[in-house]
Structure formats: structure tokens, C-alpha cells
Image 1: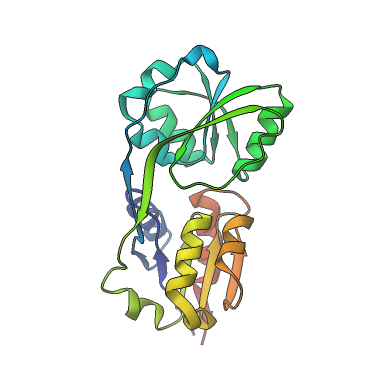
Image 2 (image 1 turned 180 degrees about the horizontal axis):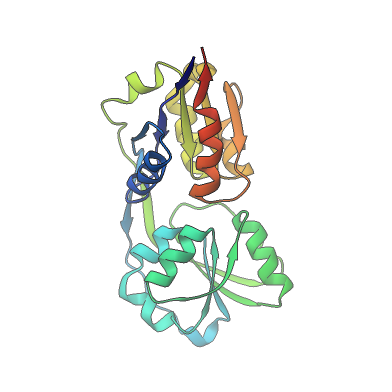
Length: 228
């Protein structure tokens, strides 16, 4: 007999609902249980002439940066993942490059193309990047902050399930909130950094081949099938 394990989506909204909808279209029993909430930060728009390109490592930057994006629209935007690229396009930016791995690999590619002055529209809490000799300016325009787990969280992780970790910070929080329960839980991590932050001891732990929902959900689909 084949049973489907539930899929627990912990990313902040609106991403959580979007992921659940994609998963449901695949026939998965997906449940939105955000462990973070995103909010806009005030930020001062720099002179676009001081930069050669924008770096966006999360769709939240494009969604929450607000009207300050307009003066930067002439700069080519380099985005991690197609979801970030789509959000950048929707915000009026011109996407020049879409990275299909993590932020560091995209930055490496930018550096190899002699993109010297880079404005990184980022979150307040972010992973460190090696600038690879470029002038990389990090400018926080949003914050993603922990929220209390939903009321159904304890019941959801009490039985076998699959969880998605869309960031290293998210993976670390999932690990802290699952504890010993991870022995019967499986995890799909968006990157090697996220997998490392999640730690060991999972029933299964998979690193997605690309940093996007489609790849993560393909991996989750395989894990959500359990033989009984």
C-alpha cells in the first residue's frame, strides 16, 4: 500500500501559500506552517551610478523594497532562483542573470564577468558572502523574523512528515523546533548551507539540485511516498 506523507511548508508568506498551491497541484498533502514573517525596512536609495548591477538573493527583496526600486531599475538584476527573478520582473527590474545554485555561485559568476560594483538588496539577517574581489555593498531592505509555530505544529511533527527548508536560517529553526522528532521526519533543503544548518539525525535529508520550488517539490514528491 502506498501512503503519502504530509508536506510541511515553513517559509514566510506569501511564499508559503504559493508553495502549498504548487504542491497541492501535484497531489501532495501540503500544509502552510510559517515559522517566520517578513516585513519591509526603511532604506535610503543610493546613487545608481555608483553600481554596475543589483544582486537579489530572495524574492522578498523585490516584494518589500517598495518605491525605492524604481531609481535602480536601469541596473541589471542578478537573481538567485526563478522565483526571485519573477518577483524582480514584477517589480519593474530588468533581470540579466538567474543563478540556479546558491548566492555565492551567482556572485562568483558576476565576478567572473567583471561586474565590479554590486548592490546587494538583502535581508537584515543574511549569510556572509565572499565578495571575490568585487565591491559588494549589502543594503538591507526587509527583515524576516521568527513567529510562534502554528497551533498544529506539535501534532504535525509527531508523525512522519516531510519539511521544506527554504533558507539556512529557516533550516536552523526547523531543527531547533523538531528536536528528537527529526528521527521520523525528512527534510528537503534548498542549498548545502541549509542542509548543514539543519544538522544530522533526519530520517532523510536531501539537498535540492536548484534553489527553487520546482526542484524542491520534485524531491519532496519522492519523499512523500511511503511504503506500508
